[in-house]
Length: 306
Image (cartoon, rainbow, N blue to C red):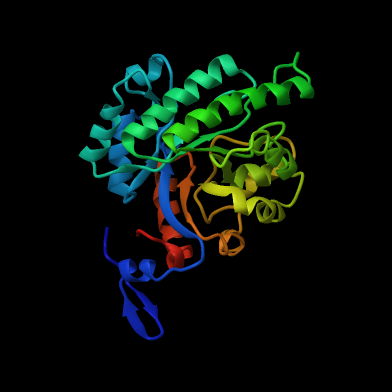
């Protein structure tokens, strides 16, 4: 990518110098969730290649257990955890990419699946050097009441907190489901287990679409727990059709072309003194291109790597 410069106090400063001067506030790196190439029927490797060509330095792969048919014939981007973890690293190295986090969404109310799946994702994360695994509660079975659901999730998260502590990886719960559609519900799950390794992945689009509370007030309530952000914008048409009717959506539109007030998001998160990945969740390759340019401009003053 081109080495752009910023002007500070009348002096031209390179991005590297500017980023090193950011103190006591949130600092960002931009990543790309691999869902951007799902509609284009691209394989994992082809998606990594395209992300690199667009200008991204980090990706958030989706991972799965077993052998998924469309992935096996190179029509889908998800990466099987049956493969050698170093294969993912090899592919990323080939295109000069790094892994920011893993989209390891697992059904917390189904421990027979979630514990094994998240454990394997922890091992993969350790092999490739990323620190964040993103998930949500997923679907609550009709036969499960709230008391059983919460106790089951507590069991799952307790088991996973022990694995996370060994691997020193964060499990980041995002707003997406029946419980996490409100910040109180989200934090109830995050705090089911007292662990420094269970945090929040704030999804800007899902929190807006739920339509139950103001998403910016919600972000203010949870920001001290936010260690990862899904940068998802919601088109005005999407908002009109589904806000208040759903608890989340797989992907949004290009960042900056929808309803999300990104400057307000940045302002709310400013006091949080740590590095945070902004992982773009859009559904088209051209949207990934426009999202990168928009976020580079909007978050320029707090970007570590441009």
